[in-house]
Length: 431
Image (cartoon, rainbow, N blue to C red):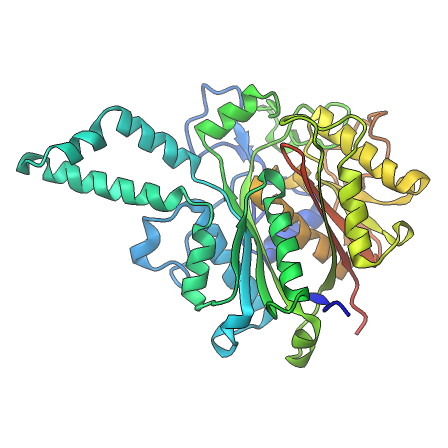
């Protein structure tokens, strides 16, 4: 019999708040975390809005001074959010067999740092410092070495996972996924499998991301995927609305503590939900577009339900990928109809990105945290700014305000750039 996986701890750092409480309160209230860009001067950019994490200070408990200058913002989010999730779970890893503890993360790269490093290298700043050994260049050499060291750290997508392993002396599997927008969804799926297969009893699973930079904003804009509603940041992310014009790039981190059910029960842990299903698929379509017929996403959802041993009629709620782009929202709606048929019209669906923006590599994890809270509290998140119905998106998207509704089974979907899909199923624990 397959070992069951419990969710016992949650942590979040998002554009709505720097902990789970502020994030969830913002979701329930239907607040937008999207504001004018502050991380670089975007005054000459066609896109000047983002879902930035605000007033975040790295936690000295989780980030020693000697590492502070070597890691980027994404890793800072990861370390702080993991501490929150462990505290929420009531877990002291120093008292655990850390050979039975693992990590699975969806991480990102520090693109802004790449741009600045390459700019300096192009000016021969770094090259000259290494080529010229004269005393006059010692200071330049020292600065160049420091810059190169930072680049070597920040370019790695797995630096957050590695630092967590060192910090907590975790000796179990440590894995990092990078499948664009579904990165942390696939990481959580891997974590589930490791517990089910008796490789671990505890997994720290989730994602972290900070891609708000000149590079990312310019790149996504040129692909035609970003909203340019600069005069109305709070109203700019409009998933499933007729007047949607693209997604909003965001940043943040979501971490879940997963445990084998009996392990959690023995220590008297609070069990938010069971992580019962994971499904993955590929659209095999295009690198930048989703298929109009919705094929691919429907397969991921079906595989997730099959993995959970549940049928379609048992699904009470779906937290959608819901980016707010013209093609994605219509395709995702089609995916739901493909799988659920007429039942699709009876399932409440909402997009957390309407409030958070698109947190890219961390979006799956943050949205699963929100879905878990929805199941735990009986409050369904709203899709804010969904004001004008789109005939192609005609399902129940919980528009504008949160809804009180008890749910027992929920899906959380991530349909990534390039067609790499992840669907996670959670269900109520009845202990």
